[in-house]
Length: 240
Length: 219
Image (cartoon, each protein chain N blue to C red):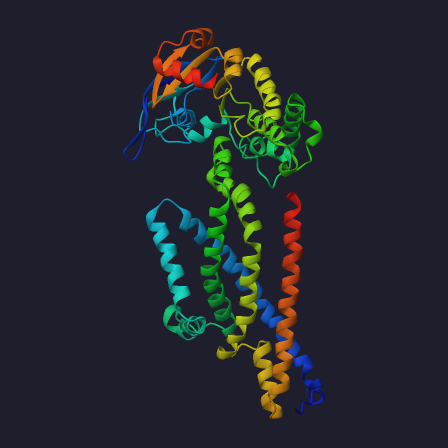
């Protein structure tokens, strides 16, 4: 469970997040949408402290990650993240990308790390690419490997930062399929996305951010059918 | 032009022995400079201001004064600094290592900054601690990109090592010079020295290309 209370983030004088309060229950899939510059990526990146919050608290599994005494490295081991631009390690093979953190961070032996890795590669349909370097993969394949890499740490929560925005249109589906399967396994997921269809179908809840403010927090049926705020109405009009 | 190399044939083994001396100095100074360069580059990219400042000061001193001066300061200054006279050979390795560390740190710093910031974020998001992230993820990618610049630095080091002659190290340069003095003819032995340096640099260039090719296998 992730509990965010009055989260603020400033860059100098610029206020990017103006007090976000929300809770993401265990097993819940939350889609975070909003116009560009609304602070949705910053919000997501605050959850695993890739951005340091200016004020406010974030509890992940009842641990205050904004507390200086919390070992943030330990917390991050339980929070997987998938980036828009994949960020696979280019000098490591697909298999090594998956086994690196479990071996070096969790201290798993090579055999058990590889066993997990092969299982995950199988799950994302890329077992035959285990020995390839990332440059040899298509965008969709890279993103599926990136998802598998995050899952190899066996996290309790997965964060997705526009996972399909950098992909060619024909590759979006294969990545969304993997995410859908993952959602069905009961994984807690927070997804920043522009894929409205996906948000509507897979998310349990939609968070609509605009100007650093959480404007709407409602189930997708409700959000897409009758958005309460004028800003959400305008946004959806432009998107659909 | 009247060149007579035959009179130097008996002196060849003597000159060639200098290769070992030069190589030893270059390799040890190169390793020292490389390790120092990594440490200094990490200080330079650190968020702690005092560490940046120390590393920048170090670099500015070693880049801002002549190498031959540093060599002599270390050699002739050793009795006053540490209380006893160090060997010329030790002074050579120290000064070259300390000097090239300054240059190499700038090369590595640029290499680290050129690695996509996302790599660091991906490692951080996986809970990889800073040291392991640098060593396993960032530095290998940085080194691949800066290999040509590093090779250049080692080539410079090989050639510049000839100035150890000034403090009496028996390297290729000094041996050739002595042979010249013995025979009252400097031109030929110096040409021989030039050829040896050239071949050493060519070998280094070849090894560098081979290493680069190996590191590019993930492209």
